[in-house]
Amino acid sequence: MVKPIDEEEQITDPEDVEEDEPQPKGTLYITRAGAEVLRAELKHLLTVERPKVTAEVSFAASLGDRSENAEYIYGKRRLREIDRRLRFLDKRLERLTVVEPNQQKDTSKIYFGATVSLENEEDGAKVTYQLVGPDETDLKVGKISVDSPVGRALIGKKEGDVVTVNRPKGEVDFAIIKIKYV
Image (cartoon, rainbow, N blue to C red; front, side, top):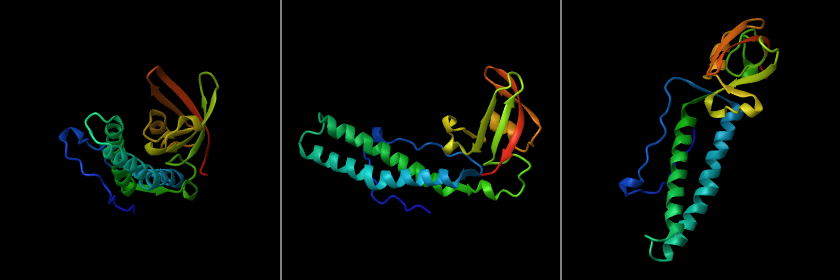
């Protein structure tokens, strides 16, 4: 469990109050590596970024007139952004369920964490994706969300199956070539 934020700045101006990002309902899954990335971001914001910006705001406030002090105004805005992200990460980490893909018992079907090799039935192009949670999606490294159209189409399928994915530019059929859990 993540420690609660004890240094949170008090916001008194109603215009400064921002709502936190909505939290989705249901079970949220993440790989251990994805959870570690979120924990590292939380720690960095809490121990490095926030103290640095707080010191900058304190210095800017000591210069006098705050109404026309750009460093002070920007610093306060940055503190609010940091605090909002800290609250989001704290809540999110409490709700996430860490899944170890390599401990999957049924490796014949596609579940969360699976690395799947696909072949486009139309042009023969091959791609490999790992199905991960929305917090760790990164298409550049082949990590797609289980909530994406491709991810939803793949869940529960086996090698040799053909899935049809509805995309904005039309339907595409993919043949499942290989499933592995790393």
